[in-house]
Length: 71
Image: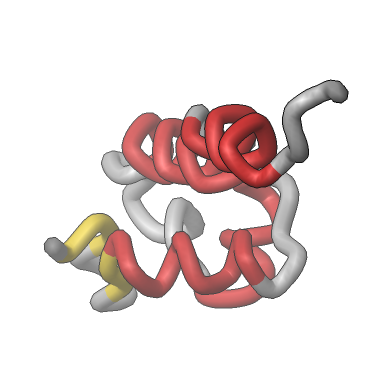
């Protein structure tokens, strides 16, 4: 979905930037321009950065599933 219509930035673009190391909406804006135009997308950019940066809830369950049982 298009998040920033001023610069044609999608939610996938923002998630990719977070995977590549962006840790804040400002870093995303500096990398691709999202949020630098009219500013209407800033709340969505903030939410996407927070969502993409949050640790997966599945990770602890996978770690438990892989750990050997105590003897």
